[in-house]
Image 1 (cartoon, rainbow, N blue to C red):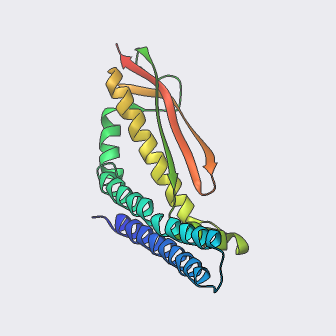
Image 2 (spheres, one colour):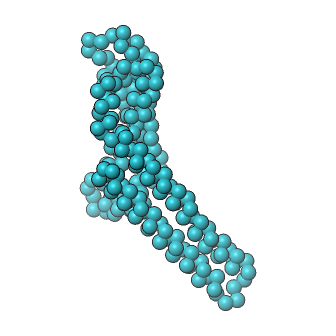
Image 3 (cartoon, rainbow, N blue to C red):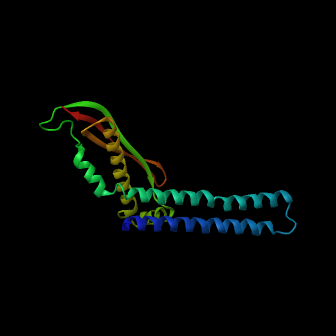
Amino acid sequence: MKPGNTREKRGAVIGIVLFGLLQAACVVGFWALCLIPDLPQWLFILFFALGAFCAALMVPALWALKKRFQELDALEDIQPVTLYKEEKTMVLVNIDYIPGKEFEVLGMAKGTVVQSKNFGKDFMAGMKTLVGGEITGYTEMLNEARQIAVKRMVDEAEGMGADAVINIRYGSSAVMQGAAEVIAYGTAVRFK
């Protein structure tokens, strides 16, 4: 396991722990409200249901943690060493020609990913905006997302039988608070 993945896994666990503490505080608070003497039954049912809902939210959170661990384990296969090895066989350029090569156009190849940071890093990024400077958590997130998008674009181009992808472009947009979509696209071509 690479040090970056260990750090990412630790950050994801810290995010789940913080979320779990928040949910536990909500459950305890709703439980305490249920103990109010002479509480109308409809309020007791409401507080009990809200407490149960807060506790139940841990199930999808733990499922998301499991999925993130699986993503991080899969990322080890497309970290820079593997990605660069593939780039040696697939020519990737951001110009619309390859000097000295004739080719036939196969179509557009694209790769996209929507990436986010864990709750802990997102919170710390918010704190960093108070004082300014680079938010390294988001820089790392976008670099990882670009690598994944390029890998997916290369896979799609290979599926078309391409030897190269020309005129490569990147795009990025915020999908929601703390999550960004990154797309890599270009024209897949086959050498004549």
